[in-house]
Length: 209
Image (cartoon, rainbow, N blue to C red; front, side, top):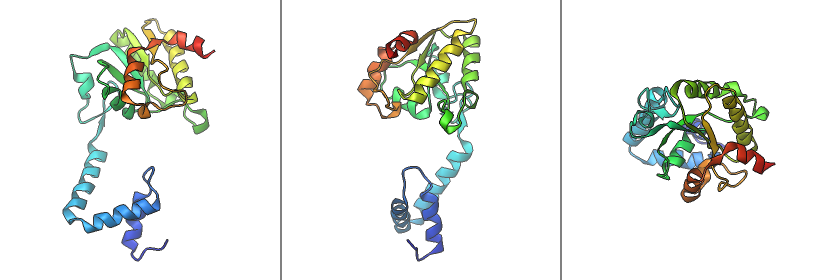
């Protein structure tokens, strides 16, 4: 589709680079912004710039934060010896929305995926292992998506933790989360029950077999 303006072409092309947005949706959003007061576009662009330039990653768990240490890691009422390992910040928000978990988190930043060229050293697994050794962690909950990549990453982390001189309990969320289902799309009740009914990871391996 040809556009009557190079400026319109430019903004449509940029918006269409966002995930899940095609050219038609991008055009609709661009024309919507055109009809709004200039201040709305200025506020939006400023919010995007502020977010991109000023957002931080928590020094402890890798969650996104406004400060060097996120609110969850700073909360003294949380159980800091209970660490839930998740793929990304969306999973933190999903679990927090259940209101059933009072431990802290460790965000890997992805999953091991040979097909996509992502290996263990591309994730924050080494940081997790050092955290376990230095912070006297009692339990590590592996809360990764029930996919091939999620299971691969779970097993890799389980094996690496098993090699440590310090041995926390290793659990995984119950399989109320369907096989092949990504954590962020699970409903809150199912996710809450999966967290509450977590099981030793070793048992989950035997069940899979």
